Length: 289
Image (cartoon, rainbow, N blue to C red):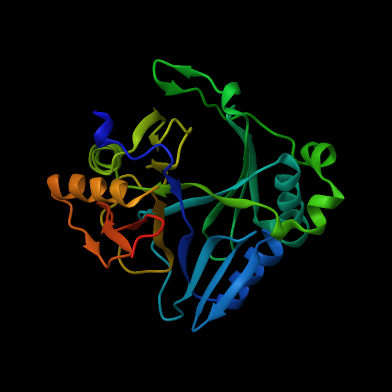
């Protein structure tokens, strides 16, 4: 793939929108459990984040039903913390307020991650990255693994009173978004060949892609959704946001999408389109519109 066909190196992920049935309950989970600040709650839409960065947008949709099992959609939203102390504070908050939501942990070599599931079944990953100088690549693929992490030992080693006292004011952002899809080959054709991410790894029914040599900004797997078709309107994932550095980068993306037959909508601020499973993607650039 030519450089001009790739997303800019400084591309990142924006807030993930979830359609929710019980808005108050979900606000409580992300605020009191995950440790996010409630930035706004107006007309059935709540925005939560850390520092000044939105991380999740909750849209109240009480008339909608949950998706059927094994459909495409969100696997998890991954929240990236700047330090192990900040990650430990979030883990402690979940473990003490919503212990039943905790589902596991992993040392992925590039990162340390803890997993949970929100009250409406949406996956959440809380993680911290090791320095890029500690990452290893083999033949262009990032070396990742899934090794056990003792959550209690991690808390004992890294939890600090400072990180606990002002958790929501400290930095944090969406580091990556992981989707459930029908098949990996179709995902690669869309997210790599059309959208412009680079493949960083692929194993076990999953594809990992990124911009700028990150381990992954997005991932797609078939672990629960092999063979799934287009999604029907339901609770769960509403929108994935991607942020590119500038208007020229957004223009190049639009050209690639048009050249490969992907229909886009442009309102002057964002460019929107759907992937093959009807997951909605919006791409923005600072200062546009």
